[in-house]
Length: 453
Image (cartoon, rainbow, N blue to C red; front, side, top):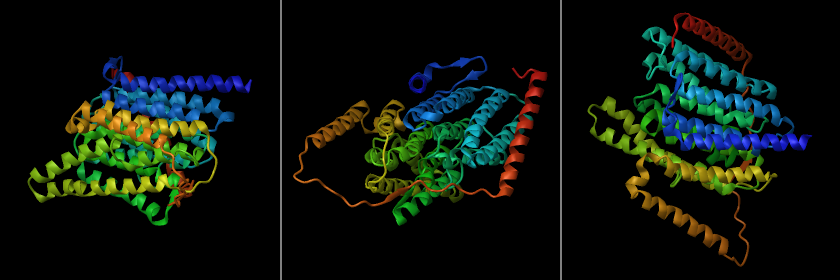
C-alpha cells in the first residue's frame, strides 16, 4: 500500500539521519578498517552530508518518487562515506564513481543539466589523482598535490560544490532529486580537505570575493533567486577551507547546513524565515562564524608577520574580505527574515529548517568552532550564549503586543531558472565523463595486476 511504503521509507530515512549524526559524534573512534582510514574531520563532513541528504528525503514533497530517491540516496551516502576514508587511490576512484552514477541517474530522471557539471568534476578529479599516482609511483591516496595538478582538481571541486554562482548542480533545487545536493556538495568539500594541506590564501580570497558577488544582486534587486543564492554558503565555506585548512571542518559543515536550508526553502516559503536568516548571516553562535573567526585570526597574524609583500598580499586580501563577508551575511539574513509572505509550506520542511539552525549552533560547540568559544571563555561562554538565547526566546513567547506588527517585506523569493548549457559543452561533458570512466577502469585493472593493497 502507498501509505505503508511511505511510512517504511520515512523510517529508513530517519535511520539514515541517525547514522549521519552518529558518524559526526563518533568521528574520533572510527579509526581504520580494511582499506579505509577515516580522518575525524572528513568523518564530520561526511556524516553531516549524510544526515542532511536523508533529512531532505523526509522534508521534501516527493511521495510518489520517494522509493527511487531513497535508493539513490542510500547508494550515494555509502559511496561518500567510503570515499572519505579510502586509503588507496583505486578504491577512492571507484567510490567516487559510484556516487557520480547515483547523482547522474537522479539528474537524468529530472531532465536537467546537472549531469554535465558532474561529468566535468569526474574528469578533473580522475585526471588529478591518476596523474599524481603516476608521478609518485604510489597507490596511496595523496596527502597533497602539486600546484599543476591542483588545477583539474579545483575544477572538480568548483563543479561539485557549486561555489561559483550559476555553475554546479544547484539547478536540482526545487526538483525531485534535490535531496542529493548535500552529497554532491559534500564530495567537493571532502576532496578539498583530502588534497589541500597547505594554506592557499590567494585562491581563498578569490572564492570569498566570488561569494560576495553572488550576494550583490540580491541586495541590489531585493530578490532571492534560490538556485543562484545557494552558492553563498558553499562559496564562503570553500574560500575558508582553501585559505586556512585548519578551519576546513567547521567551514564545510557550515556550508552543508547552509546549502541544505536553500534546498528545503521552496517547500517552506511561508515559514522558517528566522532559521534561514540565521544560517545565512554567518554570525555568532553559528558554526560558520567559528570558521570565519579562525581564518581571520590566522590571516591577520600571518599578514603582519610574514616577510615580503608578495607573500603578505594574499593574506591581507583575506583579512580585508572577511569583514565584508560578515557584513554581507548580516544583510542577507535581514532580507531573508523579511521576505514576502507568499506560497504554501510543508510542516516537515519548516521543521527541518529549524533543525538545521539548531544543528549549526550545536556544531559550533561540538566541533570546537575553531577555538572561538575557548577564546571567549570556554564552556562558560557557550553556556551563557545558550542561556541568552533561551531567555530571549522565552521573553518573545511571553510578550503580548497591543497590535500585531506588519513590517514591510524587503525582498521577494523566486526559484530561479537553470543555467543553459550549450550543446558543445554538453558534448564535451559526455566525452570527458567517458574518458574518466575509461581511465578509472584502466587504472583499476593495472592496480589489480600489481596488487596495490
